[in-house]
Amino acid sequence: MLKKVIHNAHDLIQEAVQEGDTVIDATCGNGHDTLFLSNLVGETGKVLAFDIQEQALTNTAERLQVAKWINTTLIQDSHANMDHYLSNDLKGKVGAAIFNLGYLPKGDKAIITKGNTTIKAIQTLLEYLKINGLINIVIYYGHEGGQEEKDAVLEFVKNLDQKRFSVLRYEFINQQNNPPFLIAIQKRQ
Ligand SMILES: C[S@@+](CC[C@H](N)C(=O)[O-])C[C@H]1O[C@@H](n2cnc3c(N)ncnc32)[C@H](O)[C@@H]1O
Image (cartoon, protein in one colour):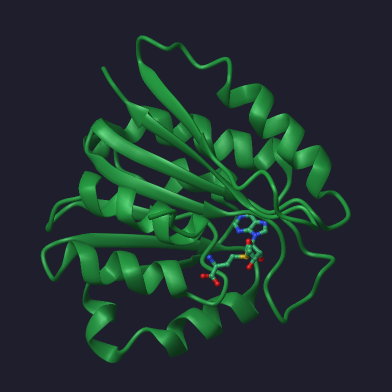
C-alpha cells in the first residue's frame, strides 16, 4: 500500500540500520524521529540528535524515556557543524541520518532550516555513511523560505554521482498545499 511519507522514511531506515549502529537525527524538533532511531539501534547503538533551539532539545528530552538516554546524545548546535561531533573512526560507519526540514511544529515559525546549512550537513554525512547507509530528507516547503531551501537541496542531490549514490524522490503528486516529500540517498560505494 502507499505509505505516508514519514512512514516510508522510517521503513527505509529500518531496512538500512542494524542494532549497534550510530545514526543521526539532524533536526530533532519534538523528538519523534530521535525516539524512533533510539529504539532501532538499541543499547549498543548511538544516536546523535541535533537542533539549534533549546525548546526542541527540551521537547526531545521529554519524549525520550530515561532509558533512551543511554544511547542518545542531544546537541544544541547547527547540523552544519556535525563534523565537530563525529570522530574520524566513524567515517564509513554511520548507518543512517534523517532530516525533517522546516520549522518546529507548535514552535517559532521564524526558525527554519536553510539550504546552505542543510547541504553542508548532507555533504558531511555522505562521507560518514556506511555502504548501503541512508540519508532521508523529508522536505516541507510550504512556509516562507521553504521553496528556496527545497530548490537548493534538490539541485544538490540530483547532481550526486550515480555510481556512488542512489537518490530517490517519494512524493504524492495530487495532494494540495505543498505536501512534504522524501528524498532518500543511499550510498552505493
Ligand atoms: C520540522 S522540525 C523537526 C521535527 C522533528 N523531526 C520531530 O520529530 O518533531 C525542524 C527542526 O529543525 C531545526 N533546525 C533549524 N535549523 C537547524 C540547523 N541548522 N541545525 C539543526 N536543526 C535545525 C528547527 O529548530 C526545528 O526544530
